[in-house]
Length: 224
Image (tube, rainbow, N blue to C red; front, side):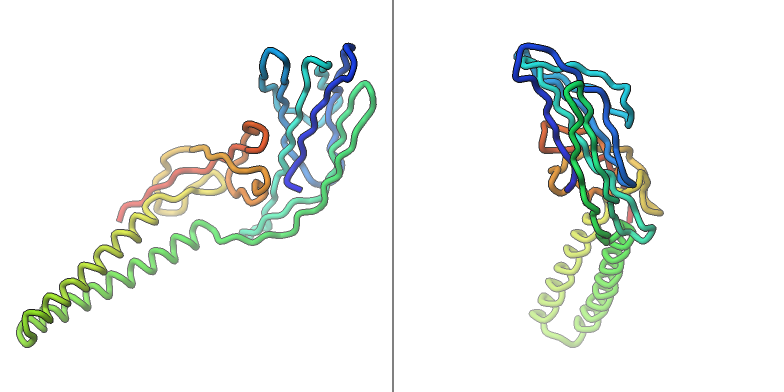
């Protein structure tokens, strides 16, 4: 489970209160509130883990609490989440939502991906140099149509290098930093579906429109 969404409402005209959130276990979640009423909706504050938060709700104004699980790293690029139980306290009782452990999920780091792409670029450059040398040599011994064919091959490699360079010129940095050699262009925001948010390696953000959550990577640039 990537998190939980709980909506509190009253079946009667009377008013009730949400009296805070407990998190039991080693796992942790970040929870935010959204109030929906007949006149519209408004986003509330981030909830802390205590019983001092008191927020009213009734039949005309529901209170929705969205909790996103926080992933931990194993220091080797892998992500996991410990088990926990969310306890939603109200004046009508407490409601528990258990969430199981999310096992270790390895991922390729930005640095490794960039290194692989740069290796491919270097290989393409080496091939272009070889092709140019062949073209120069063949200019004295090969007919014109052979030279044209070699030039087309060189142009093809040149375009490939352009594509590879553009692919690694801009990357998204995890952990609030950019890879070595890249210029930090600042924080950006993307929204991810809650169903896959546990794979998010970037800084976490608030919920968005119910089924989505903001993630905040660094935008990084390198010049070749």
